[in-house]
Amino acid sequence: MDFILNPWPWYVSGPLITLIMVLLILFGKNFGMSSNLKTLCTIGGAAKYSDFFKIDWRSFKWNLVVVLGAIIGGFIATQFLSNGTPIDLSPDTIADLKALGFSNPSTNLLPPEIYSWDSVLSLKGICILCIAGFLVGFGTRYAGGCTSGHAISGLSNLQIPSLIAVIGFFIGGLLMTHFILPLIF
Image 1: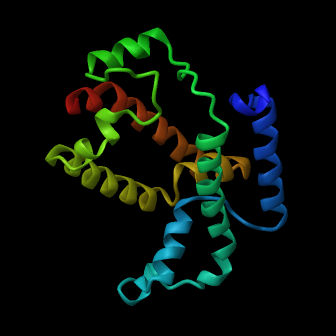
Image 2: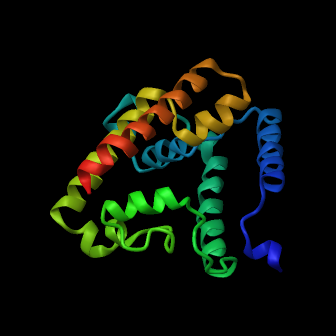
């Protein structure tokens, strides 16, 4: 039971991801979460407004199972397989987050300073959501896919554009963490 309640080690989760990627390659499929949003928008009628959404969404419906699995898996993991132990953060990270105003940074995956309804529904929270949503949407479209698609599917297919995109994701994450996040909080 202890194995179920603790995070799975890399030597279990890594081969499972590899198995899924091998199966996707064998069946000629590509993995990526942003393609699900495109499929959902197409189902909702977005093709009336943009040629980008003029696709045969039925050929992508298999990928919607990935979204459903992520939602169900996340729910099961948090509700039934979590043992409540603190998040394993380095002491330096905890000190940095406390300096930014986070009260208990290692106790919650979703800090209330960002994800509580009071924070989200404030002017600052709405601005952050709108700007972040625009940047994620623009970046995903500009890069030709999302982080999961490029980092997992693209790199496993040895695609140079995915390598460039992943390097860009890491650079963007470092810039956000060290320069922009301190300005927001």
